[in-house]
Image 1: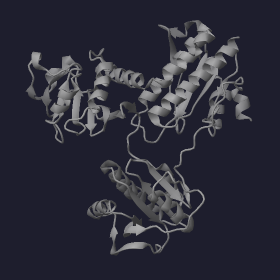
Image 2: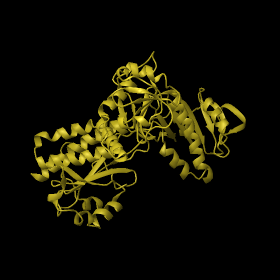
Image 3: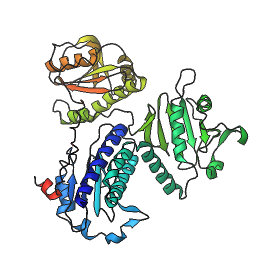
Image 4: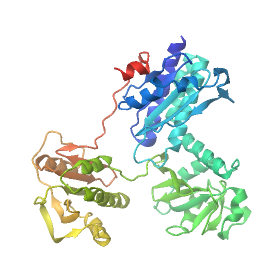
Amino acid sequence: MYKKISKLCAFHIYEGLCEGLSHFSGPSRAAVIYATGRKNPMLIYDPQNLLEGHEPKLRELYIDSTAWRDDAVDPDLLMIDGQPIPEKNLYLTGLISKGGRSRSIFYQMWFTEHHPDMCSIGPTERWLEHAVWLLSHDVISQDSAYLNTSGYVLREYATHAVRDYIIDELNFNLGMDIQIRIYPVLDAVLGISRTLEEGLAPVGRIVFVEPVLMKKVSFLLRFLPFERPGLTNFKHVVKLLLAVRNSDRTLVSDGKSIIGIASGKLPNYHLSAYFQSGHGFLVINEQPICSFYDGNFHSSTRKTKLVELEELLLESHLIASDKQSLLFKVVMEIVHHAGEKKYGCTLVIDLNNPPINLSGQKIEPPLDLKIPKLLDLTKSLSKMDGALHIGPDLKLHRFACILDGLSIPNEDRARGARFNSALRFTSQNTNTIVVVVSADRPVSLIQEGVELTAYCPWRPISSHVHFPPTLADWINR
């Protein structure tokens, strides 16, 4: 019965964890390795093969070594105020991990993907820590009637994960329990971000400062106590943001109301909300925590990483090694500019030497994109209809290019002409990579008629869960 309960608990927590993290960070897998007792074998639950490729490290940590088993304290002492004793992030490549020990689960370690565009792994670590706590609690309660509840909790845990991380950071760095209530602050940030003023989304910064540190703020103006706008009066706060829009000034709040407007140096370890017209970022001491948009918090930096493009360029023998990283940086600057200004564009990265002929506006001599003012000009040219033609020499050879090609089977009629033209063009032109930036932010990387950044959904997981294999059997499979 105990084995059955632990198996079902792991399944329901896994399902809720994956769904919650996928809303917060994009499609996310998860996995857990655990041992129910000191003498029991290590088991693994990894239905989406997240840990594939990490077998050597897992063997080193859990099969070849018994330190995880032998160095543990007595199980009767494995709870502090009802909380499992934490195990640190293992920092496996491309993964975030957190674990713990308790009376009910002797050892457990949860894993999920470390997406390349995350502001911070802190909220995700808090998420995994809560999965540890829930599995320990559910197994010891052994009540199958409530197993679904933990999955529901983890699915909707985004705001709680952000709040837990903020409190941990502020308490640790300020050396005291903070007085600002974080939940109302987070609710206010989302409410303000959704409030328009004369049709415009808010732009500006609000800094949340501990009341005891308010004397360190250099106020330009300060409201009288009985006239301070409440933080929940979203419309009033958005109007006040007009006074700090596009400047070094900031609104200052104690978490309940707007105290005034300040400029200059602020107290250490303050929480800031940057509003950037429809989206924004939560930041502690200039270190981003998460972004917010569409009424929710997300882990994304909102800057495309295109790891696949970087790998393609680094592995290519058609471009000099000293130019590979420079070409990637040039392309990403153009892509980020299009994303920030919300317009679509197409970039043809032509690795042929000499570059192929394209139908477009030829430039003589080509623009050297290593020169900042010419790169800025290229960003402006990318707004025109047609594609930019960038060669392996880091120069812009043409702009407003038309990408020709014959129809191919894997075209997507749900996508625009820019995307499908890129599919056709790359299918007939070797050694070319096309980056397609859509006005609504998605970025596609296309080579040889295939979208390399296409999203492949994880295969569904049956609710009929087989008993997890031992880690040793899984590694040796």
